[in-house]
Structures are given as structure tokens and as C-alpha cells.
Image (cartoon, rainbow, N blue to C red; front, side, top):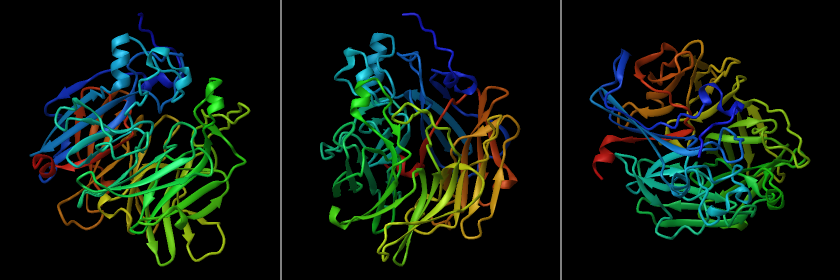
Length: 473
């Protein structure tokens, strides 16, 4: 069939589908030097379009998965990208065209893929139990080879995971290999079921808690502390009857409340504490920790709909609003169900990260994308979470950045002492770069910049795996 992509905003400029697999052995150094002790692999995932969308429309979070890999050792960085060849990709490759319709709406798919998973595997990558897994919350993980990114297959933890999907935002503990994860709409589209899993480094399930959401919500991310798992439910709601009519997978319900469930780890659904607040969206979590009887959650908070392309039930598209890194505090001794909220910084920001070794405990150092401008430019921000001080590095006019990845300077380094890996979009050249920043002195600019002879269209999230862990098999 003729391949012709539609002229839609989702495909303009940097967002134009790339559809390219790349291998570069040894990225060219532009300036500086790659830190000598940096040894490991940075994996990332993002969406691209295998073929023009079946219905001629698209949203930026949709598209087939593309896995990216930066391998760093002895001052040399090599790069590889490969399609995630899962069931969806292979069915379309055979047909030579797109077979899946609106985002996650199976009622708009081609009849030939009625029994094929529409999972896109385009959001995140983790390394657990010796397996490299690509994640998207619409399906179970898909395993790929750690060295080549070649496909291995859909992974359900040996049949022990009973949910139909798993989140793209598990919490992974590098030191002991524990994986804390969950599934929402866990028994199928539009169900209110949610389940929390605690899985050890051998793939054994240590904890499994099922409960019901207040509505069939989007739950994109969550947070954990030593004793609690924190689930935010926001009024982007799935209505199966609306899907049958050809509607969007989520609809924005401004009259509903945000509901937050604090699930006691090792407990039961009867131990859950529920809290409520005005309609809004909690997109990505930076961290959570316990202070006596209070649980604090640092998250990117929208005072409205974070995805304006999902309309209200009557078809109205509500204008989007910016996210602000905010601290929510939940008092377990309170008789009420409200929570306190304050902004940590007054600059809009997204894709927050910390030193992953300290997830669930109070951190001082946070990192995120800040200050996206009208020209598409953005910067990397470092936040002192005690003082509120923000320092930033901007790669220059017409340039933007992907989510930063923290890497500890060495084993046992203090919290926040290390490097930030950042993919940079050079919009004027339509090419990308890899920047390496000192996480303690972001404003000083990169200690190394490396040229990439291609455009890295979009990546959402990723994981750093130390070289010794990969080599140990």
C-alpha cells in the first residue's frame, strides 16, 4: 500500500515520524571528556510510527515502541536503536500497514487483529532478574536482549502475574533487585480493579494486594515508602460504552475529585487510607517519604487536565494547564480525608527524577525538565529540596532536552553525587546530542557533549544499568 503520512500537528517538525533503526559504534566527542569511571548502559524507550495511523489522526503518546541504548565504557559511548518487535509490530509488518485505530480503543482496530495485543511497548525500560524489559501500561512487559535489543517475548513472570497489564512506572531498587509495580484496570479495559505487586530479584511475588479504584481511572505513576504504596486516581476515566461508540480511551471529568489511596505494604485492602482533593492530574512522581505519621509526596501536579486531547464526556476539549512540582502531605493521624499541597518551585516542570538509590526516603536533590518555551526549548533543572533553590542548564536557543538520568559517581557516593545523562534535541540542525552533566553543578554545563548523526525523535523514560551488573549475567 502507498505510505503517506497525514499532515497533522502531531507529525510536524521534530515530531515527524523517524522510522529509523541506528547503530553507531563510538559517538563523536564534541567537547569535554566522558568521565573515566562511567561504566554501564543507559536504556530508554519512546514512540515512533511504523506506518501512517489507520484513522489518519494521532496523539504524541501513541505509536510503536522504539528502544534506545547508550553503552558507555572507557570514555567511549556507542548508540543503538531498534523497534520493539512485539505482537503489534509483527502483525503490522506482515500486513504492511497500521492495524490499530484510536489510542487503546480496541473497538476501532482492524478486525484482523481482534486477538492481537495492541500494546505499544513505548514508555520505559527496566532491568530485573537478569531481564531487560520494555514497558507500556497497556500490556505486560516485553523482553529484549540486553546487548542487541533483539526481541525475546512478552513476559508475565512465569504466569504468576494475573493482571492483564503492568505499569510503565515500577519502582526498581538496584541494590537488592526488588521490583514494586502495579496494574490499573487490571482485569480489562474499563474495570476498576487495581493490584499492587512486590516482586523479588528471582521473580517471586512477595506481596499482592487487589482493591478497587473509585472510578476506572488513569494511574500513570505511583510512589513508595518503606511502609506505604501511594496511588493517585485522577478523573481521566475510561467508559467502555464510549469506546464502543468510537470515543477516546479517557474522558476528562472536571466535577470528580482527585483520590489518593495509601496502601499499607504487607497489609490488606482494609488497611487502605483514602484522601481527596479538587480535580487535577498527578502525572509523574519524584519521590515520597515518611515523617512520623505524615507521608510526603513530591509530584508534578496539574490544576486541570494534563492531556487536553482527551475531551469531557460531552465532547468539550478543555485547555491544558502547566505542571508544577508540588509537595502533597497526608496525615495518617487525621480524621479527615483532605491533604495539604504546596508548590516546591514556581517554574513549570516535568519528568522529575532523583538518585534512584534513595527512592522512598527523604532526598535533597531532584532533577527535571523546566521552562519549556514557545520555541520548544527547555532546560535541565536541579532542585535543592530543602532550600528550594533551582539551578539550570539550557542547551541554547532552539534546543530542548529529554528526561535526565542520574548515575552515581561511584558505588557508595553520597545522595545526588554523580552525573546526569541527557539527550538534547538540536532543532535547528534536526540532529541530537548526548550531554553529560555534573549533577552537583548543572549550571556549569556539560563535562562532555557527543554528536549523534541522527534525530532521536522522542523518548519518555529509561534506566541506567551498571556495567558490572550486565557483565555478571
